Image (cartoon, rainbow, N blue to C red; front, top):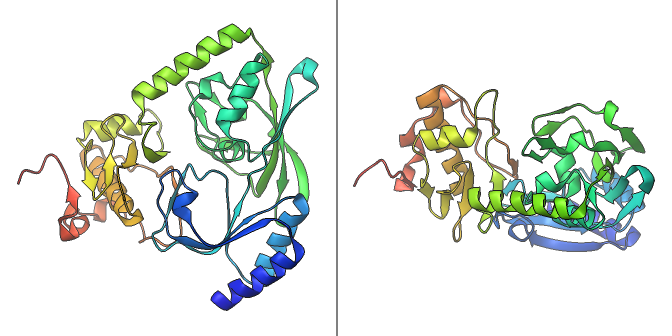
Length: 329
């Protein structure tokens, strides 16, 4: 594997000016602050360099993962045996300003984009105040909050599918709750915003930020909501009802502020977060019959996820690592 990585990098560095980081810890690229090293991290400077990286990864049979700010990822303690391509372009521009169309590079953070729109009196994003990550990741996962999803504002995007570049309109893509069928790398996004009084926008933004800070552990290392909400239920409410708040494996803890967050309170390992997720999923299934679907993405090698009905706490409590407040002694 290392020979393949070396050959890949020699060709990549010979053809591209983008930055290359060898054996780079994924803990530095994810909001969980967890994860071993990727074989290499590549930060492309242009569309042509993205094409080159894709071509070389195919030629050398190198696994490749595209990430932005790593806000929805749990990376393995063993790292990722391949190339992580980091999309960090950060340009925003208003186009056709009379109709409030905005074009933004996929690597722009949601926080920066929201502030940019507020300063120009452009509404639509203020309800997403506090959502982490980049606009590219938000579109890919159809992020949303308080009744608004990013797909509601989407006009189209520039995508590379590994073979060619294309613009896809909103009508060409299928979106669902926290998912899409986008089959490629998102490079640019075009949004439809609307004119709104700046003071009103600022007030709504502050109200939404206050709500999020009050209800979510924003000051802790996490990957956001662990499980998806389902038809007629909130994952967080189910987890809380089943008594899982405060459960922990090592430094991985189910947040006391919001039960659908697992937080890293020190030096949590990926396997600890994974075991805690499985324990919570199992308890919710036992108590309610609901099998929670994971929202965060696993990067690297993890144990296979088993059917909830086949899971036992004894299996997960190897080494007495799982602490449950409902167990005394």
